[in-house]
Image 1 (spheres, rainbow, N blue to C red):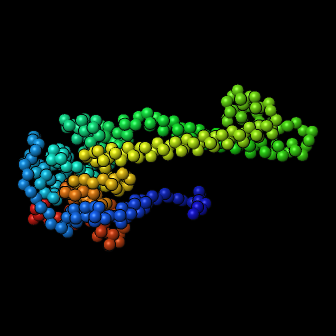
Image 2 (image 1 turned 90 degrees about the horizontal axis):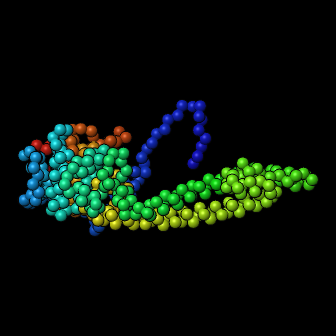
Image 3 (image 1 turned 180 degrees about the vertical axis):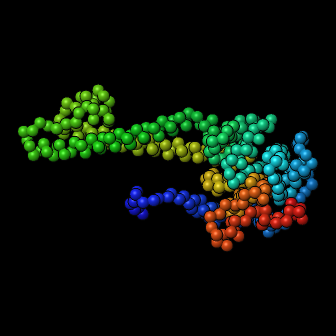
Length: 367
């Protein structure tokens, strides 16, 4: 419901992301044990046992120290791996090598984080690898979500642009045409309102000159030449021409919007195909359940970066999209998950990080 605002009273704008919680709840409610890999999510949360199979590394990871190389090996062999990377320990470099190794093993990767900034940082590091340019050209590495940082052509919109360049320019022209039509309809209706009182008065004064709009006003809707011609016709004729103009503009607006809807549907279909082709999909944990095409995607591996900041429900959902292994990277000693409630239940279910849930004592854990 709407209500007037007292502009003289103190006011504050508070933005509550309830729609994100609603969408997350819907996504979790839609999980199906026959269609999603709930077993991996339960393994991630320490509810199911995990296994590790000795496997030789397929890529030579030069430049890594012993602990970093051990982390790469753990991530390539274990169904569940926790990598604790405090600042300055080369976590991003190690993570890049993990991605390379898993790709060499033929695995499909969902690389998700709590923030776009973390995705940007990993993407920038991946861009320095020899295989990156080829992956971008082939569309096998895709980044979801807009960012002010460089996306190196990996953002899904960039891929759509390359595949649908002419189509995209057509879509932009159609949207501009809709905007122009809506603006001209508004102007034309305003001119009819200006003309109506004068026409009413002219009906009661039969000998008065016929009222009409001048060319300066008419040029807001018509070309200058046509506006000049129409300025010399009676007001009743101007009214009829304006009504015809509005009807035509409405038809243009409806037709353009219909074409836009068709183009948008083509874009959605193309985005789905591009996502299905990708071997690495990078996104925030939020986009893992917000982006429509993600619901149908399935991956081999979840890599959760900055997992110490991740709230548990979206992390659980992301794991359900992956079938083979979960790799959790972060520093639980840094920023905790962000919650806006002091309720004890909320703190226990959302306010804890996954490190505390699954590996509360890393020193005695094998993961």
